Length: 195
Image 1 (cartoon, rainbow, N blue to C red):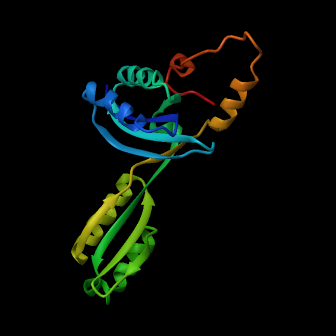
Image 2: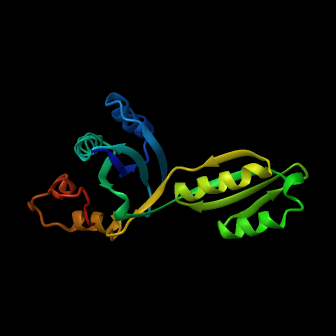
Image 3: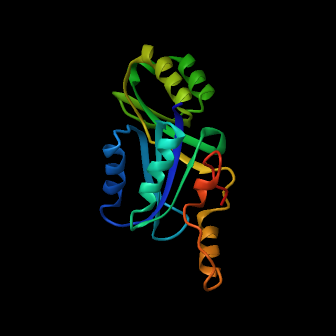
C-alpha cells in the first residue's frame, strides 16, 4: 500500500549528484512530490530531503540504489510519524483589497503568517507549517485578491536522530578490521533507523 515517505540523503557537495539521484526516480517512474537540498550540520556534506508517495518495498529499493552512488554517504527513509517537518509558503495579495480589512489581520495571526513585503500594488505574506495549513490560507486569501502562491519543498528532521555527525564519528572510531554494516536501515521493520 502506498503512503508518504520522506527520504533523507547525506552526500558530498559534488556536481551532478542531484541529477544522478533524480534519474533513479525517473527510471522507476516515481513522481517526486518535493525535493529540498541544503547544507547539513557537517561542512561539505549536503542533505537532500525527498518526499514521495510509494510502497515501502519500492522505497527500500530506491534507497539501496541511491546509496550506491559514489558521493552518497547515507540514506534514510521515514514516515510522517518519525519526523518533524515543515514547509514555507509565500502569498501575494493585492494591497488595495486588504488595506482596510481588519479581518485579514486576524486571519493572518491565526495562521501564524507575517508580512515580508508591502508595496503600493501588492503585499507578500509568509508562513510555515504543514501542507494542509498552508493550503487553508490559500483558500482564506483568495477572496482578498490572492495573485500568487508558492510553497517550498519539505524540510524534515528525524525524531530519533542524534545527528549524522555522530554517525560519522562512530564510523571513524571503529576498530581496524571491525565489520562495517552497510545499509543497516534495511534491517529495521518500519524502515526507520535510529542514528
